[in-house]
Length: 162
Figure (spheres, rainbow, N blue to C red):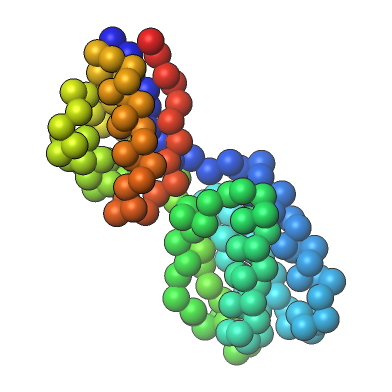
């Protein structure tokens, strides 16, 4: 029975390259001079610190620009609210979301059932497995998931088995 997995994964090498490019640009740009702006990645959180809130927002814009240029989806970023940092500085914590959360997985299963396609969806940890008797049904589900705006996820389809 043909099947495939629906996942939401970050391309980490491209993300790290975009982050390095953003760091280099921040060091070189005149408007970031003497702002103490820094971007630090630890685990799946990115901490952006600068002496003013507008410099933090500008650093986020630089990072977004580099991510888009490297074709990394911005849907993986969960940007937190501004927080106070030591010495009157400002910081923001950006969480990188990877995998499909249980709520979104249930929503994908419900959508597949509602479309009336002869396909079954099952939750497999942080991915969703879609199986059907025909490849055409699987391709229809892929197309519908790409068009589903209410999910707000960057979806990839892998592990296609015939």
